[in-house]
Image (cartoon, rainbow, N blue to C red; front, side):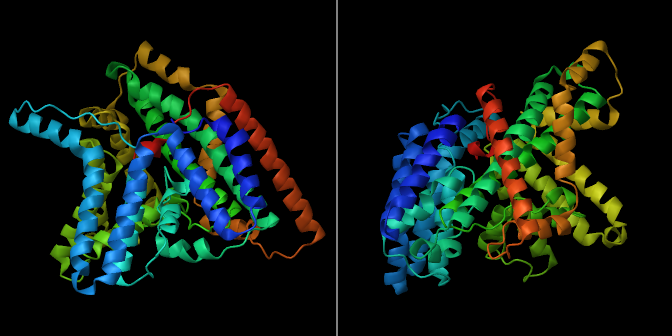
Length: 475
């Protein structure tokens, strides 16, 4: 496991920030960030840190050869794609492929066992985007390997995103500033993300795990819906919380990462949901897979096929299991349904939001299930599980603690469809040139006080609980 949360909060982060701040030049600051990022990753993955460095070096070389050998640049692009996907395939999908072949064809091939390097999908996609952008001429070639290594290994977003494109931070690698106000805003954003994770996601996750691990005979309509809603809140606050933490930490060191979530549960269509959910991944697939496949430029039938291909790989990216693939195809089919059934465009906004949330919730049940059959059973019970027994009632009531209810209520309010208002508030809170007035000083002081209270609360929760997994670490 990567650094325990308390070690990270009490030792690693303060030491790293102080060291970074006192170093006199940007060159030394970049070197320090590389070292601490490698230490951060090596603490939990002492062998696979070499794999990450090797991946960075191979992509650095591929990009150099693309820039220098214009007549053979397509060859080196293909080589870079094969190397990246090959590494990802070996470590993430080899056992899945062998298991599938054994099941389909009755073979007895031994299944390889390789532990999954943390965050391999994220740093592989970042490296791929750099090589492809160099090939397209969208970015200048980076001649320094260490700057490429910093881009790929930077610890705030290394293990669970967001996926950062090189062109978004290339200028800041060479020229960025650090200020107390920027650091304070970054820390406040980090604490906000930590609170989402520790206070809401962990609470919801504990209940969801209990229900999904229960005997199927105990799962009726109440238990199924409770598990589905708990996981719906868990995955949003878990992943958006990590993204907030990464954005906040990046800001402390002078980097500006793009937003990865924009209140997706307030979307009025599945299409809009994907514009707001895991934005860095959906834009990556659009830019580097959907458009190269032809996008919507080659007719309606080809556009449909391209979207299905994209969502097949979107599901597969999340994990080596058919539950993820089915989840991806499920979203792809609803996307096509919305596109070719125009009546949905005339549905009132309120009903459209209910429809979208229902589709997303059912999809996440399949995503969370251990097997497709378990997922389909849960979905069936959500709409037809009218068997009420003492065991099923006990399963539900065990989760209904005061803390679960309070965290659930906070979670529902926090992801409500209030995007315009929330965007305005966020812009005001994190605006660096905000004019200083007496009222503004009081508001900021209150927010910082609240942040420190939340930080202390989170540390108390972390010290008393061993349940603290980030869902997206395994992707």
